[in-house]
Length: 68
Image 1 (tube, rainbow, N blue to C red):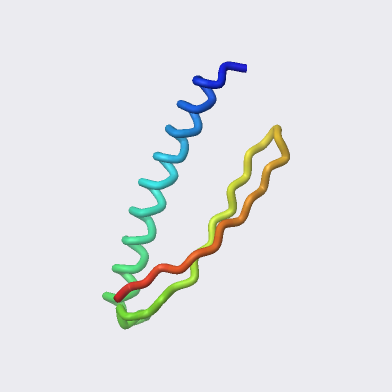
Image 2: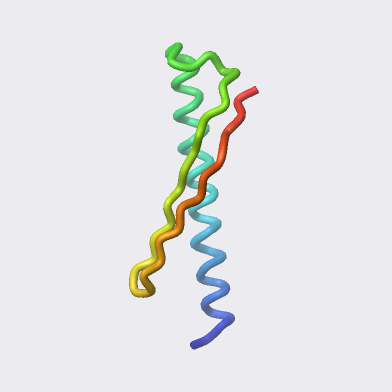
C-alpha cells in the first residue's frame, strides 16, 4: 500500500465532503429561515455517518450548529 497515495486520496475526499456539506447546510438553513420554519437563533443537532466499503467502517459523528 502506498501511504502517500492513501493520505492524498483521503484528504481530497474529506475536502469534497466538507465543501459540499457546508454548502448544503447553509442553503437548507437559509431556506428554512426565509420560509419561517426557523427563527434564526436556534441550535440545530447535526449528524454525519461515514461509511467506507471494503473495510467495514461505519463511524457516526454528532454535533450542533448554532445559528446565533
